[in-house]
Image 1 (tube, helix red, strand yellow):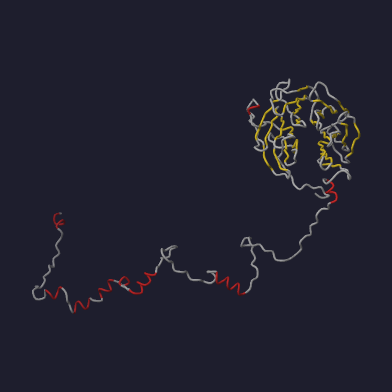
Image 2 (cartoon, rainbow, N blue to C red; image 1 turned 90 degrees about the vertical axis):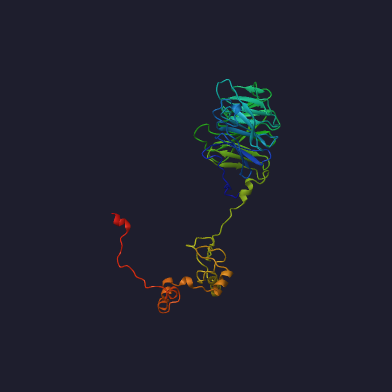
Amino acid sequence: MDHTFQPFGTIVPYEGQQTRAIKYNASGTHFICATSAPRAKLYTRMGRAAGECKSGDMYVMDMRRTNGHVSGLMCVDWDPQRDSRFVTGAGDSTLRFWDTERMVQEQVVVVKTKQRGKVAVTACAFSANGSMVVSAQCGGISVWPSKGPFVRPVQHVDNAHSSDTGLAFVPASEHLFVSRGDACVKLWDVRNLKTEVAMAEGLVGNESIAFSPDGTLLLVGLGSGSATPNSEAMVAVLDSSTLNEHRRISLGEPGDVLSIAWNSTINQIACGLSTGSIAITYDPALSTRGAMLGITKRSRTYVANTSTGPIITPHSLPLFREDRPVSTKRRHDKDRADPIRSNKPSMPVRGHGKGGVVGVNETQHIMKSIMKDTMRDEDPREALLRYAQVAESDPKFITPLYKETQGKPVFSEEVEEPEMKRRK
């Protein structure tokens, strides 16, 4: 990445589907993408597809009997203790645990509320030690054991918010933050959900929350709460234990903050805005790499090639191919090797004939030179007439044998009619 901050690749999980959540695993080797489609996609850190979840049968009423979601996904989160396991929540009122090694479904949690029918699971999150999973639906919060049983939640509270979007556990703690809904952020203890531990109000449009690497600070992305975005994007910094506001950071860009993340390795904060841009904040003294590399790196300049040398296209069509100039001797050798240009006579066919040519062999050639029988080439009528005059002048066969004893033949001059004609 250079100072223009242009992406080196673009990924479209499903054409025409909205991307709702993207999460990296704890080791950073893979990330999962949840869209409005019922199937989540797994990618490597470089953006190559590594797997895809199955979709369920929408005609099955019992959601435990299907192999996947039947409606659009709403949220996704990784198990912090196991890089090959993640959980997804969707509008079919279920939480589903998946194994990335086989890309199969492990367990299913059917979320139920007092309201009849299916409710959308709008948010889900693993605890820091991976022992619990929290889901948010219809203003309520449910706490489930990550390894089951999933018959009923361990803790549940209704009307925690008017609506909920963001869930996040405090690092190395049992405290849970819930954001969005009624312009406030609430801190809950998952061991006792009867009442909230702390609450901060006046945070309009808090779409996403994030923690500092040590967990002492809470970042809340602010918005306008209406269709018209803010003229300047803001991030509120709160104390994670008391929810007292320390300051507000201006990002210098218009729009609402829809997502926020604090990377502990490079110590930089990235915010996704409603305008489609990303704002990154850093400290020159405390941050390393990341956006700081792109600021100092200039874009690569490309020099146009203006050479006018020959263009060699060995695999072009014969119609567009141009022969390169060659020497006279080389052209002569090439013409000699071409049977059409050199008018090379056809070679005799050895063995059996083929292609309409009769085959010859050595024996036939030798016998043809020794035995020259021309009888088949003569006309038989001309051969007989050649001896007609000799036979009349000097007869030698049947007529001289009966010359003295044979009488003079007398032939009848009347022509008798056939017997059948006389009967008629």
